[in-house]
Length: 132
Image 1 (cartoon, one colour):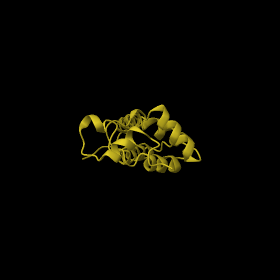
Image 2 (cartoon, rainbow, N blue to C red; image 1 turned 90 degrees about the horizontal axis):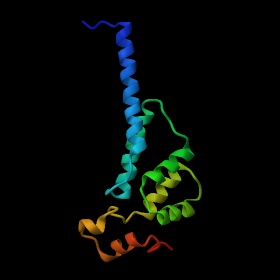
Image 3 (spheres, one colour; image 1 turned 90 degrees about the vertical axis):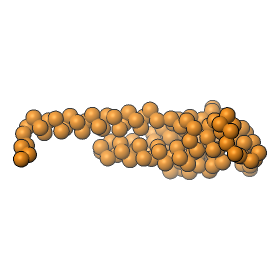
Image 4 (spheres, rainbow, N blue to C red; image 1 turned 30 degrees about the vertical axis):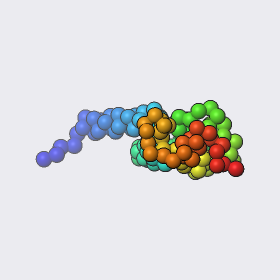
């Protein structure tokens, strides 16, 4: 038999708070490493969905800033993204990241020896390549 007690309720509440804290900590500390931009965006959204599951939300502008910072880009890549995004909105930033860096296999693609053609590796080293 399951007995519901006040202390059991407190323990459940404390556990939920710990889970919420952990979910937010994972979200806040997440940075793109070797994954493609598409995979990074998918994981960023998965982590944020977990945070939202604990009734914790972030304003749209802050979320746009957070995804740009978490993308772990160089300062020139950040400047390019900011200059072309149009507005500091999450959906716009997410789509712009995927649009600009769609051909990036990973941050370390050349050192990992991926089978890329020269166009992909050139576009990775030069953010202005193929972007008119």
